[in-house]
Amino acid sequence: CSPPALTAALEPSHLQVLDESPRHGGAAGAGTHLSVVVVSGRFEGLPALQRHRLVHAALSAELAGPLHALAIVARTPEQWMGYRGCSPPP
Image (cartoon, rainbow, N blue to C red; front, top):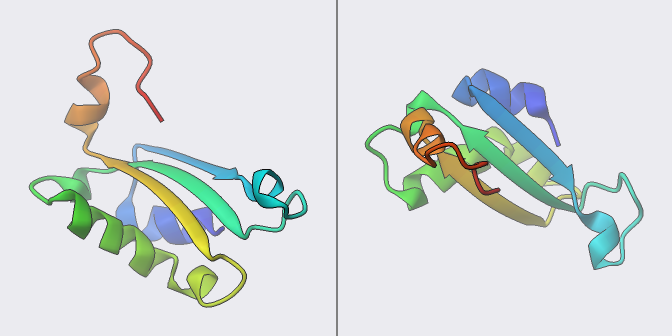
């Protein structure tokens, strides 16, 4: 996955990218199954579907290649901090 592409497109305050390929029969580092957590002010006022579309657009090159499974958590900074002292869920 390309964190620079996500960073450039979404200017996240938090970004976590996990390669889950080994859990799905792929080799470690294969990048076929990814899980991303993105916290960005660009998600303000957008429903989940539009947030996911922004993430997909940022990763269009990866989605055209080896990446074929993508789990997305897309939150605004306010939502991310709204977990009142608890660790935010993935």
